[in-house]
Length: 417
Image 1 (cartoon, one colour):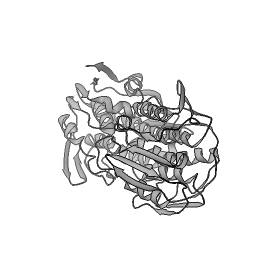
Image 2 (cartoon, one colour; image 1 turned 90 degrees about the horizontal axis):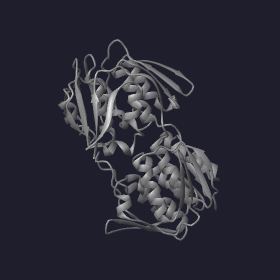
Image 3 (cartoon, helix red, strand yellow; image 1 turned 45 degrees about the vertical axis):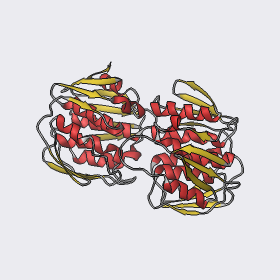
Image 4 (tube, rainbow, N blue to C red; image 1 turned 90 degrees about the vertical axis):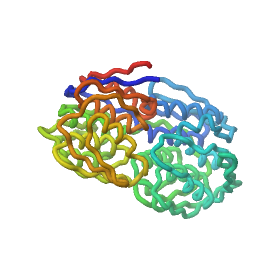
């Protein structure tokens, strides 16, 4: 098992290229199940979750070719409708094959998914939505079994604006007969990216990016060639690293419009941010100011940036409050930040942070993907040496993050244990 060792206290300077978005790539790769012929996807990040998705699609019968950041998938030979436990348990996004398999093969048997331990993320909204489209759903022995002779469009109200639920039901509805209306749909850029790809395949989707998405079912779809959008969470993580170390970092191949809430809060904290097309330059301020945040569904402040922003507030001048409204267990990184010297108190879903002059390097343990990133950020600004253990979570969502930080001047390395 690897760990990352950081000698803190260095100012980050230079340019970093942002990778493709994992959370956009996963459903887009899965959408290949809806077509025959070769789909081509470029700017795909090399991550554990991408590798897991390729294994899952291959197990279902798809042919897959990989060349650098380009993945080609032909799902014309897909005949297996089962996604077994061993392939699904490591990644929650595996549930995304449910909708396409029912739409294409008329049935699916999917193991209940696993993933990061950041709280309950039930799939009941996926299942209720498929039932509204005419599917029969049963839960047996840890598996979801779904079948439908013919999916039919319907109106579906999502109690929670779930991203994967919206994506799953969109992919099921594109081959359903008639019109489907998703109300209280998720508005994230990754949902828009999937809708754009499905429309390029021949779907008729309107309203992606709003709370109401309308899908006119079609009989067949055709393969496409598309590029994956930049990763907004990786972008935000590197933006915070520049502010945290009072550095000067330019981020290339990013999408500033996807980060308005993060950019706003960073500017309030004292960072100077300039935007030119697909580039963002972040200069750390003379001091870091305390800013309150509350995580919300997009376009609000993203829950996936909460842990990273908490590190920034840990060395800010003053007192700040961070409220987490999306996941109930997303403060489990706080105990590790305290080991590095952060002054953080918790009351329910609220963290109260008193900024300290300096953090102190220590051995810490990562508990989930974004917690891993936050501990690396803490190590970058802490005095002395920080060792981040159990970083296998990190490789699920950040492509060679230690190499990118090293190119910006950080004293950071990955070590085999």
